[in-house]
Length: 394
Image (cartoon, rainbow, N blue to C red; front, top):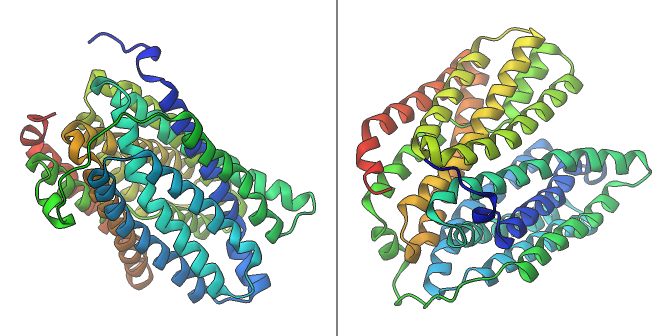
């Protein structure tokens, strides 16, 4: 296949959405970096409170991805929903600066994650609407890479501000700046093609009308999600093995760096190699990583290899899942489909982290990570078995 020129996919819309993802991740990851210490040291909240905050926020984000995706198709508008989501996320995150109790943080985090939920399908649909079909991989890979680079910059920025004399509340307030830049990037530089509103229907009626190949893909992604645990469990495993939290955090930085690079690289390869092929390879790689963490010792070279491999796999997954979705979904139901994928991913991530953590606590890391590897393997097998039925429509 002929290579895709940068001009055909790096449009003003793609660049603006990428910058929005970068600045937004800087904003909320700055807050997330210092949030546990703020809750423990200033608010005197318990670990149970932090668990409740994160669990409720993640659950709401998954639900509102589904609602937001459906709504953007119903109204025929993408941009206003995306802009409102970025704006509310920014203000709600900065509200932590005013918190006098953990319940205020809970409210702010829940509102911020609801907004992240409803904006994501609209943003992904805008991205898919703005580039040719054969450039989906480039566009989504670029957006995911920019998001991850923001996640790399944010902790460094937060820690630098603390060393410069800022306190936790200052950092929450300063998160307004990159969050506002993210909102302005969408509001000022993204243009939206006019689309007619869809005839009134219920959410579940629209979900039922999604293409059958997409449902098969959604099932595969959902099964994989049951084994895709949060990367914080990898940090915990490294901390347990080395006894040095700072080493574990350095490995996490390596994970994020490789993830950012691989998301872009996988996106660039999608047109030549095939998005489903790359996604299957990423699923299989994550399964091998989970097996590795089940049996790894305190070897620094091996830990570094596993963290880098995890970043490679996750970068491929995050770039290829929306690429495959965009290839499978007609424009009229693209928002609903992206919302369904986001909801399935969010629910899977929550259940996976709970299951892996519970099995680890009860039976050891071999069982916890072994369960994850098994689910990853099942999803890879399903993708292989159903590949022809899915790819027939891409």
